[in-house]
Image (tube, rainbow, N blue to C red; front, side, top):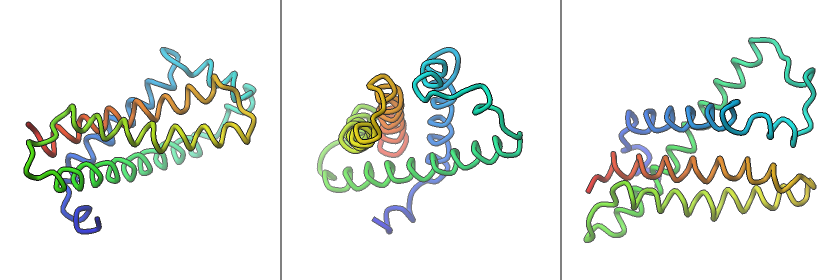
Length: 150
């Protein structure tokens, strides 16, 4: 897998990571789930106030972590494609299936275990896990199309 990682088209990975980061911005915005997320996290107004430098560091860190997770999905999609090299390329639908599998089978399940033991609400689980499932599916579709187009 290291060989695959070293030979990825990193411009594609960066573009898909930025798209994923923008999805997070939308998901946790007033247009979608930020109010419910704040309520379920039991944050106060004071909890949400921070120095701009801390906010920028958090956003930069989130972007870096999004890039890393995007690269991992790209490796999984590429490895999957190489295993079925006699078949047609994955394209967007095949990439979305790989992303959905990762999102549900790994991330949502792990969130579920953590939420259960942290005694967090089902609503919070659905917001957080839902984001990761949609993120992985979207990123899988984009990576499948741009790395292995039909």
